[in-house]
Amino acid sequence: MFRIFFLILTFMSTQALATDWEVQTDASKLGFVATQAGAEFEGEFKRFESQITFDPADLAHSVVKITIPIDSVDTQSADRDSNIVSSDWFDAANHPTALFETKAISTDGQGGYVADAELTMRGVKQKVKLPFTVEIKGAKAHAKGELTVQRTVFGIGQGQWVETSIIGDDVRIFFDLKSEAK
Amino acid sequence: MSMRNTHKTFGNVAKGIHWIMVLGFIALYVIGYYMTSLPLGPEMFEKIGIHKSIGFIVLVLAVLRLAWRLINPTPDLPDEMPPIERLGAHLSHIALYAVMIVMPLSGWAMSSAANFPISVFGWFTLPSIMAPSKPAVEFLKEFHEVMAVCILVLLAVHVAAALKHHFINKDDVLTRILPFHKGH
Image (cartoon, rainbow over the protein chains, first blue to last red):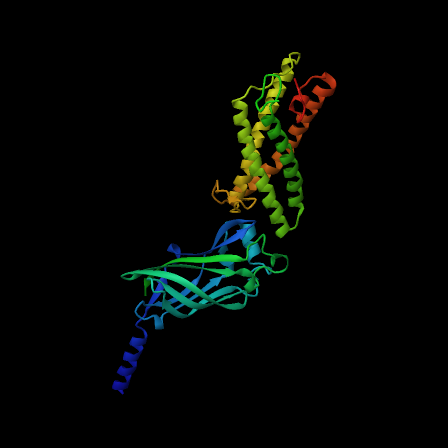
């Protein structure tokens, strides 16, 4: 009986080799850069929940899952923020969160990583590739990365906003996360 | 006809900037009032973008114009002009130069305060001149609107004075700024 228990315990501990990380939200930023009438502006999501298991030596068991409440958007313009959550844009009433979930993480051969992930926004799930870097010092980790998505693929911007000459199609999503090992 | 001003008439540079600016002002007013009447949508953003771009060009021209004025003689006012009218002319010209600078700057500041950066005709993006702030946006919006009306009054006085000089005083104050006018 004990033998089996220890076997299970040993098995579980090898499974849990990759470290779990707690994001220090105040020191981190999850934002985006979009284009409006030819000029870029930056916004960020003030709140997000993350479940991060990451170990450079155990990428197979490394997983990142980030849930973003759309209504935490802040583009330093209350008018624009209230538009972003409206039905033409993120339709936060029906799709309150965006979800980013990795399926596989591999090295890029230059000290960085690439995550094959799924990004769900406004109810549309798309496969994305996210290149990122991680610096681990003891129990602290600093991860950075960015990817560019086309907003219209997710149906973000309906009706008159489908047109992309004024509000650009490309949106650069970036993150700068500081976390501590749990 | 020279590029430079003389004590009698304006040169081509001053005339050119004056009339380009007239076109700029007309465009700014027409687009300005039109865009604020539009519902929220791509067309509104497009028109605001054009308004901001023209406003920036006017600001640059205003600076060039002031610099040009400093290194050129200014044509004399007619000898027979009474002192009170001379004072009025000087004050209204100072006010016109002031608004050419202040009005675009208030628009630029409003854009910065609203975190809506300005792309000048898609050529380049202007840097932000103040931190985002909702109260600042509201104040600047009000200021821009009230100033727009004040400037219209100022322009009306400017045009009326020019016409008075031409048709009542029958002097050369209007003709010496006209394009293609040979002057003296």
